[in-house]
Image 1 (cartoon, rainbow, N blue to C red):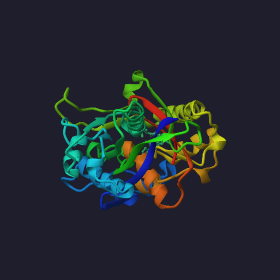
Image 2: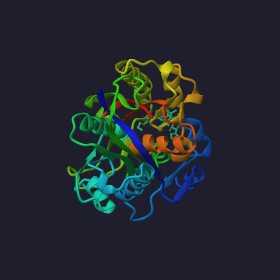
Image 3: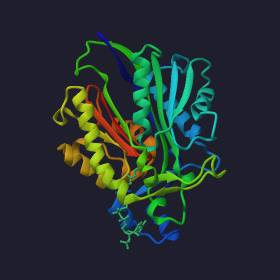
Image 4: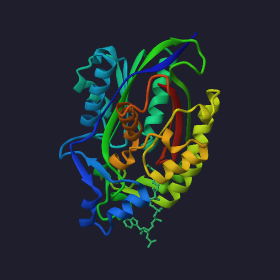
Length: 323
Ligand code: UT7
């Protein structure tokens, strides 16, 4: 017997305000056609004035707890993947803890930009396997609209705000690849690529800063590294791409999603795609896709899922989960 971190509930939240591509035509020299054809994005959501990442995260967390049939005090730990916390500190996760009315356990943020949810899942899995937590709320939440340079057409049209959450629970299992739960993880980073994708602000500048990206270069790394990390994670679980029911990728660009699926020889009808509706929501994109994919009836209990993501750092990774 072995312990597995099994998904007990999932939920998401998108801010009310939906912004179609056409709105950008009035701000920068762009077109709906360019944005759709180069990225696959048709619309995204932006948080309201005064609505912080912890607020989005709390709403997604409540939905996931309700889905799991659990109360906040049933949870031992909250891990929030975000690069857009409300404040430099405390961790936005502790704000979620307070907003949920959770008076026990511990909460912390994980910052690995677009790969953040894969990093958070890996940390949650480690806490569960080592016996330090029985139930972990894992959230990805972002307000990337706060980091946009509205004069930079190459980035401001790509990102959106949102949140998704999972509840993981320690479950005794036979210890085979047929088990439900997290079956394997693979994390990577290479800090030499810092300048490809970063925010030019922080405590060193005294400003929040704006997102800066060498899109073409990040694209090149994404195509190469995502299939690689997904293969490595599947390998660790003793599985192959043929076993995969759903790739649930980071939703940055439909061309990256299609390129990765092609390299893995998984047809697109086994890929959960939400980029058209959400844009790139960084660490929120995978849990949003998991929740929407479940709601659409795509992801069902027992399905084998592989998630993969890459972002600033560069940081990238993959998690294999049987739903
Ligand atoms: O989530 C974190 C990881 N991030 C990513 O995975 C993003 C990776 N990169 C990408 O998704 C793509 O590189 C982009 C969508 C950002 C850009 O697509 P691209 O096919 O690589 O376009 P490009 O950067 O090579 O730009 C092509 C042309 C350029 O014009 P010239 O130099 O050919 O005259 C750009 O100036 O498109 C121009 N352009 C635009 N035109 C209209 C750039 N942005 C826009 C725009 N509207 N919004």
